[in-house]
Image (cartoon, rainbow, N blue to C red; front, side, top):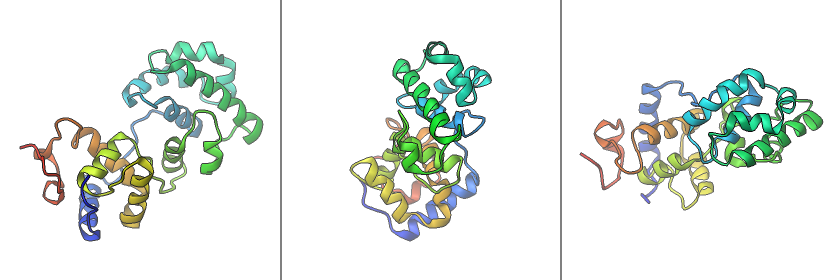
Length: 214
């Protein structure tokens, strides 16, 4: 775990990220707040690409809680059986759809506590929905962000909660809205786990990682 970078270095890093990709987007396919919530819930321990293959057909016929309940658990399973843990995820999607109808008028709530009260929705999922749909500067820490945060010193921490706090505490406010997307994309395509592409890294000169690849 690298030492926490100073404010000026972090500002330089995110200025470069912003210049390279001014408006980074999440890669999960969705058409509204409800399908975003479902997609993020399905993405736990799965790849965005794998989830997208399953959900394009699913959301064409079930893009609201009412339609999902009409499809039913077994019908949902037929669409998502290529995704890991699909049976448990199907149960949760059906349960959360029913709760959304009964308690929220079919709308996706915009508070973290309400989102986290839904079956299969943890803090990370809630933060993704808050950030991508409601434009709250919430930080959803996944394995990519955890790795990049610690490897670079942008947001070091022993667990995801510590990394989330480090992002909120140390990254300048004007970069908070897109911070987690820049970090995810950087971790997914450049600062990879086994063979980081340091030669192609736009923050190579600012990164203290000792085992840089040539």
